[in-house]
Length: 421
Ligand code: EPU
Image (cartoon, rainbow, N blue to C red):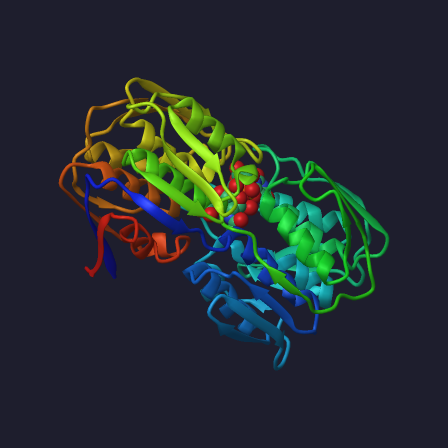
């Protein structure tokens, strides 16, 4: 196992390049199951979660070739319709193979994804979407088993207790593209990752309108072909580097970052005294005011403030000159980072799904433990500004979602090293 050693206090400056979006490429890779023809996907980040998805595709009979960020997938040996427990249990996004397997083969068996450190993550909306298209769904020996002789287009309402769901929208879209007739998904997720999936599916010959809005219309087609696609840049990684510039009082040019995908974050950054300038290659971020100002932040589905940037924002406002209030409306239990940030000198208390963050003059380095992907990124940000040394263990979480983070950060002046634990 690896850990990160970070000596805080360095101002970051220079250019950092954003990788392809993990959460866009996972459903896109799953969507390659919809065709027997060759698909070429580029700008795919080298991440643990991507490896897991590729292993699942191989276990389902696909042949996968990887050259850097380019992935070629085609029909390999015998087709399997079971996504095994040993692969699925390491990544919840594996559920994204359910819709395409069902659409293509009339049957899918996907291990039931377990609990998750960021709180309960039910799959009722995934199952609802598929049922409304005509699938029979049972749970057998820990597997979700979906069967349908022929899926039929339907009007599907996918609003849930916490708003729309990204992967439930993706699963329903992938099941609907070859269903007979028209499907209308209402209260669909509007995240850019859904728009990217729709553009991949359209490249395969699917007939989809409205992706990126709450109403997606899909007219089923008989079959889909192979295609080539370049994955969008990772808005969460970009947002994390924007906050790295601000927390260290540095200036970063973040290549590939797209303001339109991070509009809620950019709005907050401007409110707390940061400056974001758009350029031809990305954005440039630095402070406008000497000190970070406090802010009230509530996470929502897109285009609201993303839950995947909540922990990093908490690190940033923990050094502000006042009190910030951060409320989680997507995953009300996603606050495990608070105790580790407090170990570094932050002053944060939790009241239900709301964190009250009293700005402190300084953070100090400490041994801390990463608990999930975005919480780990929050600890890295805190460590960059803390006085002294921070040791972050269990960074395998970070490797699930940030490509070469220590290389990228040391390239812009951070004192950061990866060592064996
Ligand atoms: N929900 C339900 N029922 C469902 C599905 C979801 O109630 O059937 C609830 C969830 O419990 C949550 C809310 O709906 O309260 C939103 O969850 P969503 O389904 O949108 O999450 P997801 O699609 O499983 C993706 C990202 C997450 C990100 C969320 C929210 C991928 C692979 N994962 O998950 O990313 O936090 O959307 O934006 O796209 C991460 O990258 O660190 C990460 C956790």
